[in-house]
Length: 83
Image (tube, rainbow, N blue to C red; front, side, top):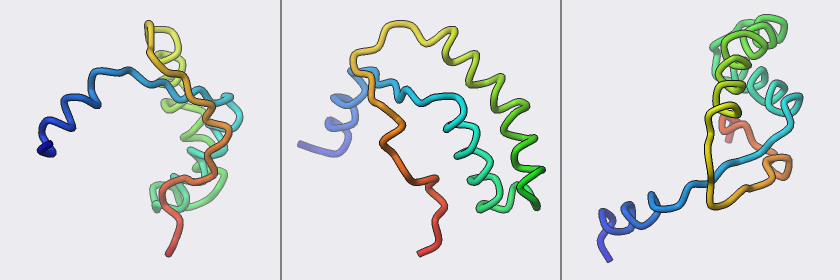
């Protein structure tokens, strides 16, 4: 199977990663700090509580039906850990 066909198959299922808002906020703040988007944790938290929180609320309000719900509390990475 080619990579293109694999991509088409994967896009047929809608997966939602359900994570409590507090965990999401903490992870976003840490990601903003580690990625250099924010210079301090206070700045990172403010950003996570602002437009990021509003975007998350919109996603929850408009997400619609999904095929699979994954518990996001089980994930521990922000994606920006130093190797």
